[in-house]
Length: 257
Image (cartoon, rainbow, N blue to C red):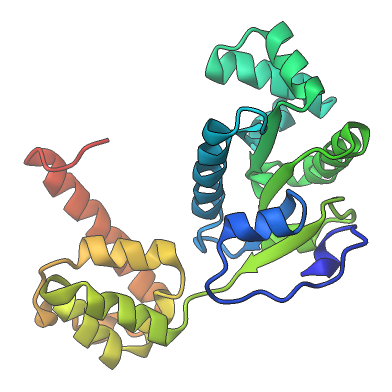
């Protein structure tokens, strides 16, 4: 999605089997990850972080990936480098002087999550702070995650090399996942095939994962009800069932934080 960033790069073709780390390397280590709520943006960023950590361990000359959440920037504002040095001290127990020297020397690969979690009135200023940092740092490797709707509402675009959007799951992908899980999700498989509203609700990995946990080993009859014919009713029913299941697991010692 080249129009989502202020970059001279054009649109590059992507194959279905291309990894996020492959995309990151191909466009020069500067990337915006967009998607709807629950589409897996943070999970995708952490997947990239895992791959980049492996690269850094194999080659000490490479920058070390560090995850920051931009929501905490809103509380302090100011230059991004100052905020990151403070975060390294508070979250990773790195002395500010050392952390700042790492930031200034480009020893860190910055993974900035939660741009959409920054307050609306401060979000544009946060984008400007990121842009000011990347312009001053030159070839800094930066990844930013944001919900698509919130990003589209911004007056300023990030100055990154490229942007990707995580697509919602297709009905075929949802059913293939549930079928592959075997007998434990047989009831969910049958219900999804019968209930278009529940199938539509499963279009994000977050909701599909919640369904898999909540409806595991349940009979078909437990999921069938005309009272939950709409997506909103299904969503509320799923949330209630998920919370009840987690409380039961906690009471029996089956849930872990």
